Amino acid sequence: MQKTTPFLMFKGRAKEAIKRYQDCFADCRVKQIDYFGNKPKAMAGCVKYAELSINGQDLIIIDSPVEHAFGFTPAISFMVDFDNPNKLKKAYHQLSQDGEIMMPLNHHDFAEQYAWFNDSYGVSWQFRYNPK
Image (tube, rainbow, N blue to C red; front, side):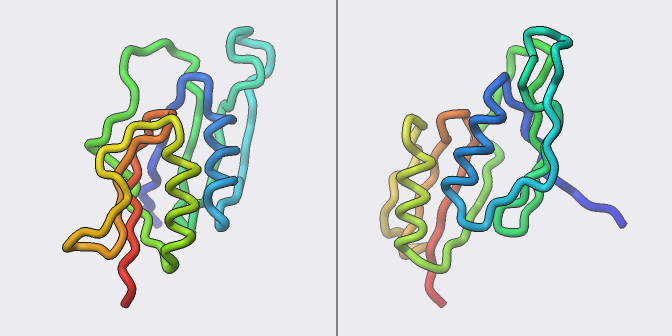
């Protein structure tokens, strides 16, 4: 069976991001995590490979051992639909802290509550609450 899984490549902060995502989302679990050993020395303790599940959506997360000039872009973001506005507000305040707010949490024509932001790692998120 084919499956498409988002793949996030961090620059040495993957372990920190995973912990923050676990704190932010009630339904977040680490399915697998492997760390670099002492080689290369600069990567010791960094995430070599991790599988994470947030609200049933699998993610692959790594720390890149290769130096690169690119990072994350808001052109691709994670849309999270919440079933409770209080859960949205809590997660928004936790995850947007030290990030970049592109659309602050507010009421919009298309959603009762909506926010779009980059977290402090540069990963882009859209949070939405629309009661049925």
